[in-house]
Image (cartoon, rainbow, N blue to C red):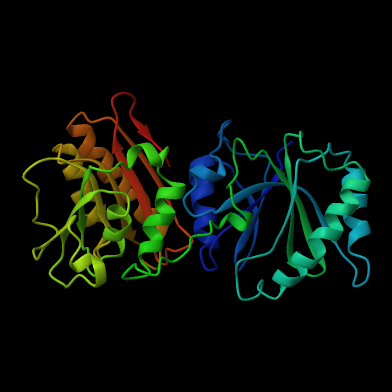
Length: 352
């Protein structure tokens, strides 16, 4: 039996979740969408992928959960229907319970309710032996409204996002010159495997489109020496930092004299042009790893993502370069996605 699936996303990107899931899983069925989430009910037909992508592998979905029950709630007693549904489904115990709501204007009023109701729900679940810290699965109670809850589960070790609502908490550094620094900080948290070992003091990096220095800041705070490439001015400490060399030149024309460890890029440019640029750097051995943004069009976002990834594959394939590519529509992204691309010693892996 195929479970219904619940996807969390940024409001306005529900259709992109749908297109990506259908393209990558081969599953077809019915969809319910509302700002901040998409609910998928698989059909009977179609050649479905027996190993569909997990939440961490999806680009537009922040979280993916298996739906156990869709329960309508009354105005007075919201707890009893939830406990009754879990008992009726004969579900095993869960290691934890998260109460969540859509990340949307419509969902914001539910934030306070979820916080208040969380302790009440947890206590009731414990009293009914439905919470066991050694259990495999985590329970999610997702409230699209005050009168409806989607009871969901997930194996946090295999598939799920590590953060409630799929949103990592990143603090804005007071000394950073722009809020764009949060995007690269989140990218290192979510896209780069074993980031601590790959971001070491003494490494070298290039920041294309660096001004005013938000992404450069993330590199230099980790002890990386940075060539900041931008015709615009750097601001604050990034304008005078000893590990930053600001070069006023075109980011599409600049090439380093020696290969660097890291290439980062947050330029406002056509996504295919950026994808081609980054792939050429890695194909020519001018960088080992890259984090970059692709500014997507308002329509046909998934089509544009596939186009850009195919372009990267063609360029690196022609150079016989094995690589890892992962991408995510981060919480701090807007109309762009953020990608991590790295040369590999073995295995041609397209992480999407």
